[in-house]
Amino acid sequence: MMKNLETAPIFPVIGGLPLQDAILKTPELRKFLLKENPPKIDLENRDALILYNTTIAREVLGLELQLQNFSGLIPTPMLRYNFLKQLHPDNLSILEIGTGQTAIISMIAAKCFRARCVATEINPVSIERARHHVAINNLQDQVKILPASEGKLMDGVVPEGEQFDLIITNPPYYDEILSPRVIWAGDPRELLNNQDSQGSFCVQFFQEAPHFLKQSGSAAALISGKQTKILEDVFTYIEKAGMRKEIFGLKAGTRVRWVIRVINPIIKS
Image (cartoon, rainbow, N blue to C red; front, top):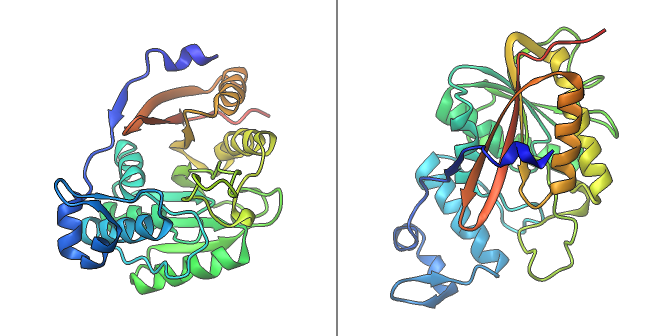
């Protein structure tokens, strides 16, 4: 099944803010410098990553993230922006499954692409903080947060009859949160903590999506290139279901994330 990736295009994650410019905008970053010329910060320091990424969100995307005493997943704003940009979400209705504590993907879609978003989330703390981020960015008219429940993604969460142009998800894969090197990972309650749950989440996403898509709609998942078992499970399901798919990669540094998109999926009785 991994032959699907051999000819898929890979796009670099573009945009962002050079570190020297980020330091000018947020001088507090200087305390995390490992060297001055060229500037380099300690990327194994969680506080440094939070400060750098919130600076990028504010200065590049115009979004305010309040992550003081933050225990959640640290979002990388430009990866999410590039994910959306490649899907051409301008002025679309979007459903995001699992928006997290920052609701950053839905907020980027609303702020930068004028999309109208409904986002789901299961963790009560994450729901509260996601709604807070939507409010402080004045996006309440464009982003609505729906509470989900265990085992439910769309069925039983999204009101019956609602349909969208685009359904998206970026599931959290980092379960080794006690490792000192996995510093961007977050609260265990917002993580899919083993490969079986990760794989079943992604397959369930593509199973349910057709019922909530407009006739011209599509559904896309952003999946880590390291998660080969999950990718295989998804490809197996999509091919058995006869769905038309599109695959491309997003590369940041040495890491590749794969976007798997199904287009105009047919609902089988």
